[in-house]
Image 1 (cartoon, helix red, strand yellow):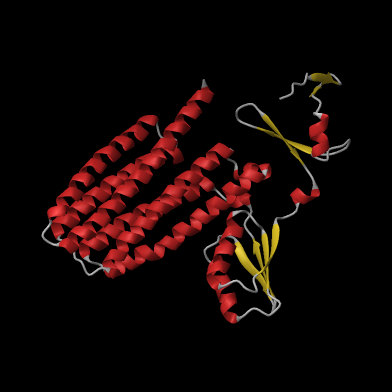
Image 2 (cartoon, helix red, strand yellow; image 1 turned 90 degrees about the vertical axis):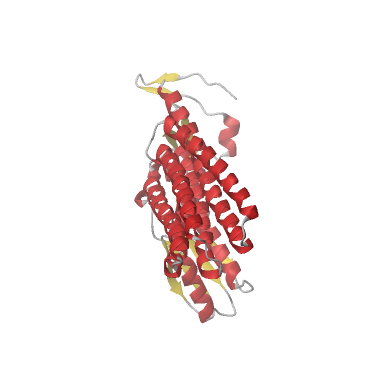
Length: 338
């Protein structure tokens, strides 16, 4: 670390010199432009402006030997790491099936649109700028969808409602789409300070929102897993047991909801502690319930119940993860206010 003495220039402006070795490494010379980004903690970040950074991030990918699954994975990866424009090339020509694969993939990527498709080239571009994105509201929306999915999955089990279970599974794509968008803008914020300014949240806040959404996405996966039992498993859960599952699920969602309030709506730290206490009580009850299943008269019911109880337990644990990050957020916020 080097220190610099602040100088008064012209009677109105404070100046400091830049370390010469650092400036040369960054290609800075007399007349170069830099941007100054004030942080909430009182620090300043200096960002070097050059043509490469002002241009959009683009990629040209040869997919001549790429199968459909790998193509979908690559498109999702290019989107989430922050590319603005993607060109898919194949000198042998794109089949109708491949174009349909691309269209299916970008259906789950907010902002990505197919602009041009020729025999050998498919061009994709992101059309949504970060100034039009509210990461906090996206996380709140994600919470609503996930809680609804979790509730409906357990209702479908209690009522043996295959149609409701299918709707739960279908809604998972909405959660995945929201999570991909939040991931994209969080990752872009790590590389581009202008992205941080457009999103109007600090990097710390963006990480917290990303982390919360990651937990939501996992809960949604378990809601899908529970719903799939209704469709794929012939086992019927007796009414008494399904009611207990419903009660356990309600507590797990309470843990998730209280924890999310701390991070997403600036709830108090006591709410996070209550959430963790609820989690502990629920886990103890689930462990006891799971042990009772060992002696159940119907092995199929005991096996299925064990898997369902595990999904509820994991959902509560993801809520506890959010509570932990919420405690950190509150203490960080209060520390800065002192």
